[in-house]
Structure formats: C-alpha cells, structure tokens
Length: 267
Image 1 (spheres, one colour):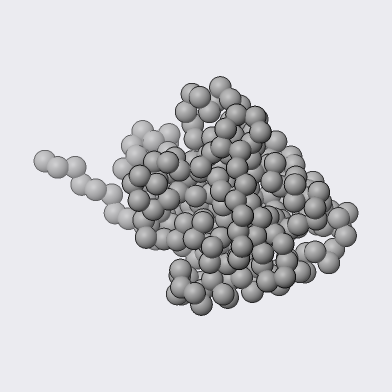
Image 2: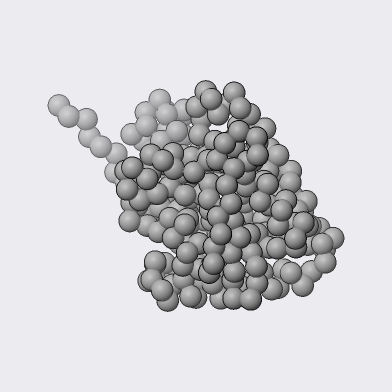
C-alpha cells in the first residue's frame, strides 16, 4: 500500500510559494528597482561566485551598493548560480563590496533568496563558516545604512550573512528560518516527508518574523514583477535610505546594535 502523504500546512504553502520557479530573482529586482547597475566581480582571494551578484547602481539621485543572492531561471543558469547557495568566496565578495560602500558613504541594499550557504566539502575547506562570521561582524558595525529585503527563501546563516541590517523587509510569501522544513523534519522525526508539520512549528512566515521583531515591514506581492511593483518598491527603498542616511554613523550603528539586542526579549 502506498504511503499516505502528509497534508500541507499554511506555513509550508508559503515555503512552496517562496521557492516558486516563476518568482522574480535577485537580479530581476536589481534591474527593476535601480538604474545603471554596474556589476563587480571576485573576492580578490579565490574566485568569483555567481550565486552572489553585486555592484554599484543608481536609485534616483542616490548611488547605492546592491548585493543580490541569485538563483537563476533556466536549468542552465540555476546550475551556473549554484541554485543560489553561495560559496565562501561569494560572501567574501559581498564583504568587499560592503566595505567599499562604507568607504565611499554609499548605502547597501541586499536582496536575499537562498536555501542556505553551500555545504560542500570544498566550501568548508575554504572557510564557509568563517566567511559568514566575518560578514556578521562587519555588518554589525558597518558605518553606512544597510537594508535587506527577503524576496524568497531566507535559509539559515546563508541568509543571515546579508541580513544584519538596519531594517529587514520581507515579501508576504518570503520565509526566514534557521533550517529548512525538510532538514528539521529529518532531524526531529527522521522523516523529511513531515516537512509541512515542521514548517508549522518553525515560525518562518513573514508575519511571524514581524511579530518577533525580526522583520520590520511586509511587502504585498500584488503585481509582483510588474513595472508598477518595482516602481513602488524603489520609492519605498529610497525613502528609507534617505531616512537612515540622515543619522550620523554612531547613531546608525547604535540603533542597529539595539535592534538585535532586543531579539527574544519580548520588547
């Protein structure tokens, strides 16, 4: 007799939506929201990681450093982009661009969409954990505004490495979790088919993140990918960066520190 499949849950439906193959990817947002994007490559240590796309762009009259985790669309492109799971050199490239942004007083905007950092042997040999930790440390004290927007999956430290920000926004079908539902189910019940049940307990939906203070704004997905959608998002980003840029560096970093210190306190 065939084994009955576990019923889905609203939380797992969000996970499926976040993984949807027709969703806009990071570079779609970069091209839709900004103008004159000039991509910069390489970590100056090992290689260029195609899972992380970053560079300089214009947002109206404001120069901005943009970093996007990119999954790709076609099978060929997804393979090239490693399905959006960065290697350590991808995080080191992002770190290089963030420090460059700080030097030239440009705000940083990150688009997050990854199942997680690549867990392969080569990535571990080249210091995957250290690369993520270096990003967390640098972002916590970066003396320029940082805004991170979750556009799909936000998986574990692979997402957190670009999300120690002054504000974190999430699309309504984006998710943010310490582990995938499948991974959680495999650990807890030795059965990945219980992923829908695990998703219900992980509190990975945007509304959960907003209630916990992990997320600051939920973005509706009406017209997702349309010109009007990107136009409205560009204005929201511009207004927020203008607000954050009005703070001096000490106040900016202090507020970012306080934001993360209150997690888990119920404040």
